Length: 106
Image (cartoon, rainbow, N blue to C red; front, top):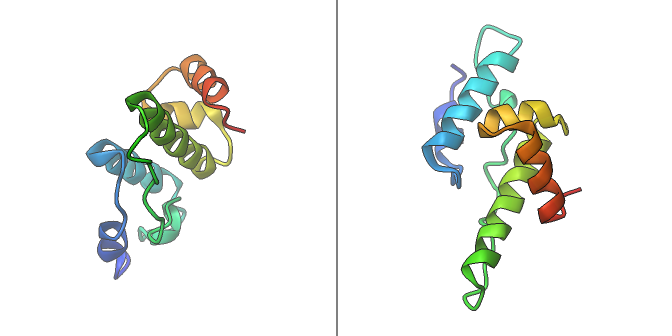
């Protein structure tokens, strides 16, 4: 494991909690080309700012904002591959496609 990787991972807020961390680790292990796990294998930005939610927002609006950000980041990490993103998110590809349409994710 690359020196500093633990600090890199610790610096990320993990909005998807332990499940997101597990998925990120699995993906990094699969995609890592070298013998050492490095931060380059993780499609995360440790400087990423938290999702801004207005206090006056409804629960649905807040939930949609989170899901939109979470799904967008996952798609970004898979270079837009919906099949891989669905696997990481542990949902059916058809459900992911429906969410992408509902949430207006491009």
